[in-house]
Amino acid sequence: MEVTKSIDLGYATMHMRSDGILVFTPKPDLDKLKMEQLNEIFKTAMQLTEKKPSLLYVDTIKQVNLTDEEKNMVNNSLKTLIRACAIKVENPMVRFLIHSFNYLFQPPTPIKVFSNQEEAIEWLKTF
Image 1: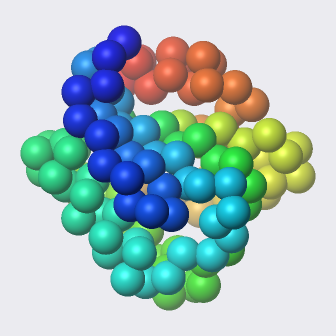
Image 2: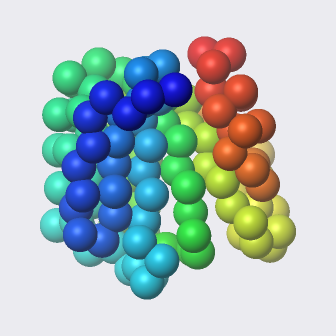
């Protein structure tokens, strides 16, 4: 796998892999995203994916807090930009919360949580 395009946002890095998977990696000290940053992330994702619905791998280092408005914005944007999303989360409690959210609210975009990158990428490749 080769990185074809990469952009450093200062608070996170985004890159497109040669297999068509978009990767979002927040910096270790990031604990909050503002609406302006979310807009910048989606604009960057559109640029990297050339506005084509893509697969997204999120490599979380720790949980990033979002307001309800920001969560709604992420949910609405995922529908048009992402075909499926795999999130690597090492914290078992956070994994449980995300699994519960998916079960209760059944988001339109398939989202699954993993404890390692390899399993996450393999799952994404099924789409």
